[in-house]
Length: 342
Image 1 (cartoon, helix red, strand yellow):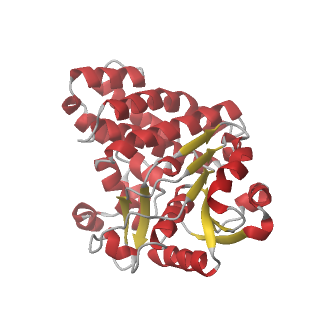
Image 2 (spheres, helix red, strand yellow):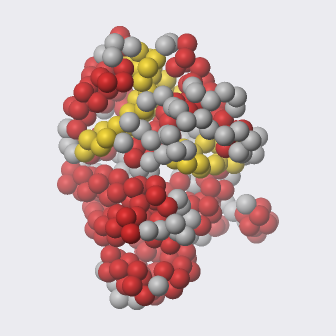
Image 3 (cartoon, rainbow, N blue to C red):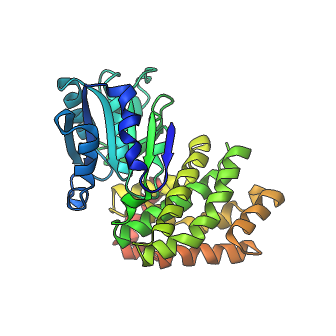
């Protein structure tokens, strides 16, 4: 993925798109709320790409279902588009990548997610423009989709699904509401931490994770309290990007695995769903990381012990909007068997 990072990097979109679209149509994938329209971001993106060339697909809900992905792929085909641009948070960016895949893989996406079919080696080119600082979908090959028949959310990594370019302009995150700032920022922290205790952790992923953690610990609260602070937003955009580069190499671990049912069944936003067990999995996994790597993690958190780190992470999650207990989500004792079996 070619990365264009920094305030006003949206200006690079025209040059980034030119090699892949020429004079052909572009499928613009985004969610179905009005934030990008009200802030003028949508108008600006369409002007840069050329309004007469843009085919707008603004039907992506959180945790996009398979039917929406297929609808986008059909539209891409019928309109003769040559490029896909994803604009928004993780869901539109994941949907854009999934649409690109399903233009070149026959059948249902559920068959590929269930491994009944194997992804082919080709996808349509995707340019990803994030408007949040958390998922890092713009610089990884992962997609997340919901299969309604299972009432479940799945995440898969597809080797050919890397976006051809990422336009990471922190100014596009200035209008992000407080709740989403907290959730997406904690998602970035969960990516860095999960990558450190993943079984596929290696020096390059560790390097990115250790760099991302102190940035998030310092700047997330500032962005959360003052969304107009461009310095905080820029630092969070950077941290989310490098945390994604970390887990893009390792995959995620138990924190993410546990989060999926909290999102698909009880509607907890993904970042909060990961943060819900963050402190517990930190404590559980810390010793297994070994002394040297554990010491680096403590230094990144600016603490001196596992106990202090656990407490700091717990407070970090609670202070940015994470629910404190299962009952806060409406989960009762009767729901526990389903929660455990998931």
